[in-house]
Length: 250
Image (cartoon, rainbow, N blue to C red; front, side, top):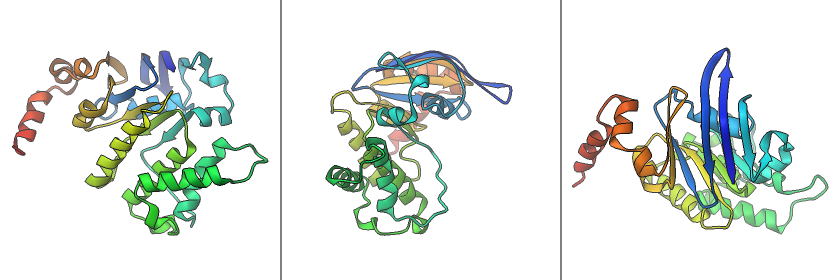
């Protein structure tokens, strides 16, 4: 589905990513992991054409850089980590903005749009907040609104930067389980940034470990998140520390 070759990003004269290679197939959930400053979020923004880069990004053989914005929006949806709103739109209105990618300029809102908006709201626990202004929401509620907007967009590839950021535990579980269910549909895939290595081990079908803009490992999550790789990147016994934490629940 997505193929990335020799991807490098330099911003302000500073190399952020260097020579990244990976691919994503339908049905896969690729987790991007690594310390702060590894380049994970920058990689997502390069995939969505949000930052300049060198190298090649292709979606089913077609160069993403050559696509029109509307075509990219029908194929890929990006959820950023931070959102700032200065307008008094309702929750429903913000979610509905995701439907523009699926409509022609002359096509009005229809039944399919309304169903997509309602399903996205239900899946993210926003049904009771549809008429509320987004200016009145908490950080976690606002994150769910923009996640719902991406689901309403109905892309084939989700690009998620910490999708459970600010969410309470019940919504973290709901969001990750919902994404896993979404992946059961034909020709869908997910690339997400996570800091919680337990979530990466639990849900990833592929892993990409980054450190200081360099690709450390790509492939099976068990191999990518091996004790030796984690030790090399974080400079500590991450696997042992995680086991000690989990032992508190036994």
